[in-house]
Image (cartoon, rainbow, N blue to C red):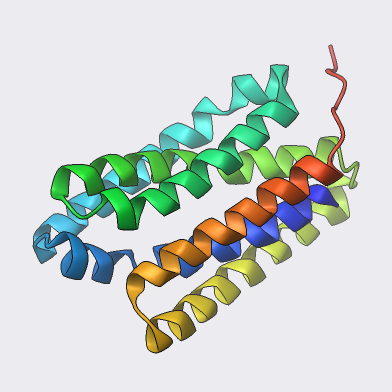
Length: 180
């Protein structure tokens, strides 16, 4: 259950912020519309790298790896309104954000099936459903925040949800013995 709770919080927080990355880059960073595509491509490529890079650390140190992924994701989202106000800063933050977010689904799904001991047959549907609902809820919450405040506030909201996920996961999860 800690894996599903963390997934819910992290995906809501990520998509509350990420949904509005284009307006942030245009309005706050001041990049051109053409450069936004390059930034989004960078985020996607970094995500693919994160997806593959997390496998080995998960196999040897699952819980610490997941805690690190959660922490880096939260710090990356926080860094955007603080360091992403320049083109190089936004570029570096999005690379780190993409890397950590790319690692997230692999890490959390591995936890759910290994440590939470949710059977893969029903667990896969439960995990994917949690993920999809969280994605939609994140975009909805982000939209409400942007309507009420501004795009930077969505980043702080995403950070707060990642912090809650980190605390919840650290408190609720137990170390997993490695299987050889």
